[in-house]
Length: 358
Image 1 (cartoon, rainbow, N blue to C red):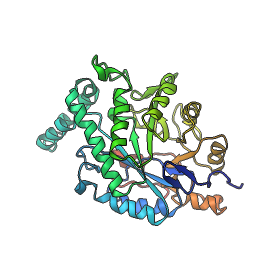
Image 2: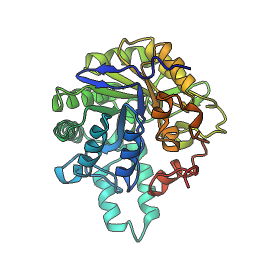
Image 3: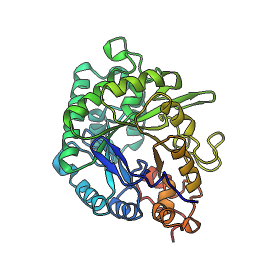
């Protein structure tokens, strides 16, 4: 089949992607550069560089809080641009008190890891309710500074992560505040405005994470009923596109569903969320969730979903875009959605791999 939509360029703000294929955010572990090269060379239109913290990173991830900590990203940006692949910086603040946990980790990380884990779990439950208004302003200032750094480094776009701390603030499961920050959308919109101040010229993407009620999945993020209002508010706060996914703060297997997930089965398993967002915006929407076959990707584009987000399938075969573009779809190595060496690596801090690669 001829893929007429999937390889159309698309312009978002001042950035044009050569096609509609996006590597959805996933941390690579220690050897990120090799993955960026494989994916960019394989032909995807944009890679979202995942989990870039706006404050000093906790457990070995990359932070955009200083030039030194951001340095490894220069190589990734250079590699992407070499292959005409755009790169977006996904900014977030952890959902817990980084200052407190970092100090505890420094003191007792080696001797008493259970204590650190217990404190981390507690802080994740309570931080949104207990963080002071002054500390919130510091966090927003960190978003602005990180956005400025991302622009200076040469990123083509910025994605604001709508889960993590932002997801806590938007959800009644975590946000029980009675002050001005008790308004579910307040923190998210202020974070977007801070990023816009830091990077006035870059297109802004929002990772819109949605909870489902029946059956109930996801604890952070927003409810399906809040989508119309939130999309409108985000557009007013200058968001240029939406990356739509299931809300987190629960088990990884729900947001990254394996082949035998009890509910999220089959291809494009989160497309119902992307369609819901698309009903309420003219801006580009990115759909994710076990998209594997070129036919499914093309059909989503045909119905008006502008961007196709893939992660595990592109890890299984980084050449997927190039194979599809050149009529070699029959040669695609198809992901098994076993989550063994990709999601498994994320949990153990190993380099991301795939059981299908020798």
